[in-house]
Image (cartoon, rainbow, N blue to C red):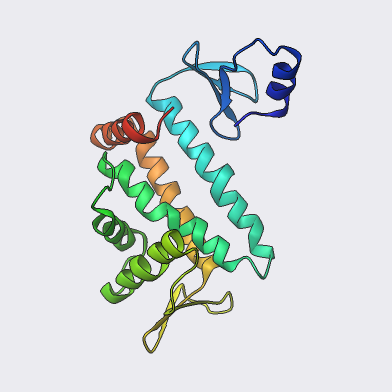
Length: 207
């Protein structure tokens, strides 16, 4: 993603090749120096696991969660909020596993959902996967058994074969899970978890 200053530089210097790219709201990467740049104080960070964790955290909050939170004041944004929040479930599990979910999407999604929503019924996990996750990312909207409302006091409620979801509470629980993950991931004693994070980052989602 090219910011305004970078665009102005390229327009003024058409022979230059851009090497500084935004990789989150607060961080750029200099692809020539192989350094991560903190845009807030212009400091250069070595491209190591701690910098990668900071970028991942910044991305998740500033490009996804905080955007979703701002949308909670819009009565028509419920499905967008739910889409943003539900995209985290499988994607974060890949970092925890240290590998992509290719051909294992349902397995990764269900494992993550059980952790994020303790006590959730198995049938509701299946609805989340087939009707929410697959609905959004294959069809562009949830499938027919899913309804949303911001007025109910619980995240999930069954109504016959239908699953009613409060997208605001759903988002809050997703954010809580991510915060918990960040705490344990930043702890250098959790070597296996950190190794899995970096393995997935370097192989699939890094810069």
